[in-house]
Length: 253
Image 1 (cartoon, rainbow, N blue to C red):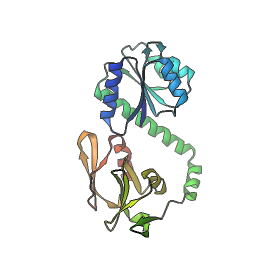
Image 2: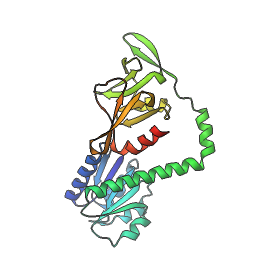
Image 3: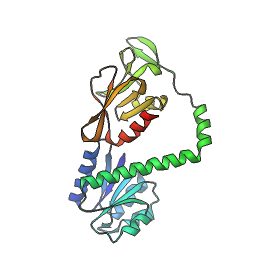
Image 4: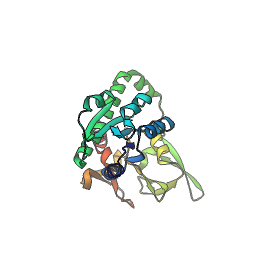
């Protein structure tokens, strides 16, 4: 989740950044901006983030001016010590309004609210375009086999025989049903796009699992999940906090 923070109080901005990064390691704070002018310039010059946390009263004006100047598809959560701006905040495409001082539970609830909002938008879009989506799925040919270059050999591997894809020390590895480990030259993003999402799920930035090889799922600390597979891996498979709910829904499909 790509996030930016707009806040003119340095200490508050750093505290919010720490809280967000502690909430889940999937959250990446790309920029901390301190004024209407700098935030406007950044949003014009950079790829739109997924979520914006913004104070309202900044040193050079109200942050509402930013969103009048720049049309952005990012969702906005306003953070302020004053509740007098609540109505204007929701008129500026805000999905939530946090009063300072921000507490961890409040922040967690806001992020979860955003994820529910995002899921609802995706679901609505899918319903509206259901016919086109079905046709597209029929035309989409996910990989049935991939070729692995291993010890001067080229080995064809059935995608359905892949248990897990994981990244270790910067190297992408696949583990097959025979518990054989192969390093591959694909990126994890490339492999994710090749696999049928009904069969494979990316549980965190470094791991994709095949549902047929999941043995059990356990609760893990900090609201995450731990997955056991049929083959033991060098590192634990942990479902990141922000992917827990989508993962559980995927399991039930």
